[in-house]
Image 1 (cartoon, rainbow, N blue to C red):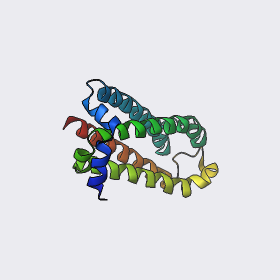
Image 2: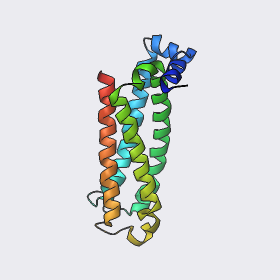
Image 3: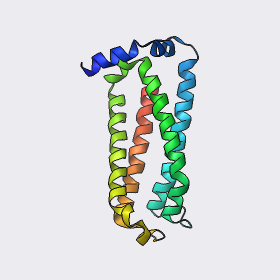
Image 4: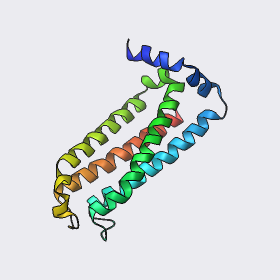
Length: 162
């Protein structure tokens, strides 16, 4: 089964057809998706700006992470669910759309960046928790993260307007 076949199968599911044909459901799902993304990006930006040493200097990285990560993960799950529902309503159109593909690649890159950060620099966060500026590895991870999330939002809005 090709990705296009899978997209066509998904788009033909009853719930996907209902979303596509409803006058109110897609915009409602989109509203929840945008709100969830705003929470995700806001929480991540707070931590990334601390990693860059330009914001929340009064907080240690561990304390700020403990406060923001639960909101980030909850909001991210909501964004995944709502994004998947929106995708299902026009999967064959989205699957070949360049901004959608870029967004998915950027989200993957953001995830890889986060994993590398947590497997490397964050393992020794107790050594630099309150350090200003933080180590180069933390600043690079924060910079990349901000860039990836801004690009993901840009692509998401591009998808929404085309």
